Length: 103
Image (cartoon, rainbow, N blue to C red):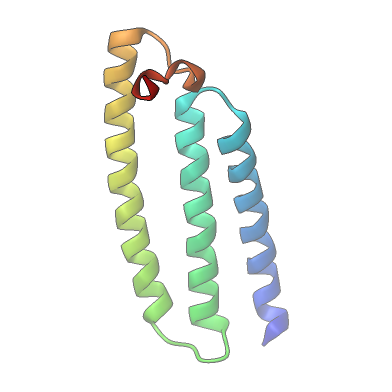
């Protein structure tokens, strides 16, 4: 059973690392938002893989994955709405310029 789950876990780890790299190193807020979505999808892949191929297969992981996809879609919609409003006001999507809440 462990041999069947390993490719999914490897793919999820690669996706999560790519998303983490993008979230921490990129300056464009849209790329950061997409990188966060990539990390959430890596988590969803793990949930589905363990729920289907784990020691005790059940639908719990798949249902939680659907809930996670719903939350991620709402997060993306709110994030993009904030970015559009920010871009209209400031004319940039650079995350280094987004420090008005600090002062």
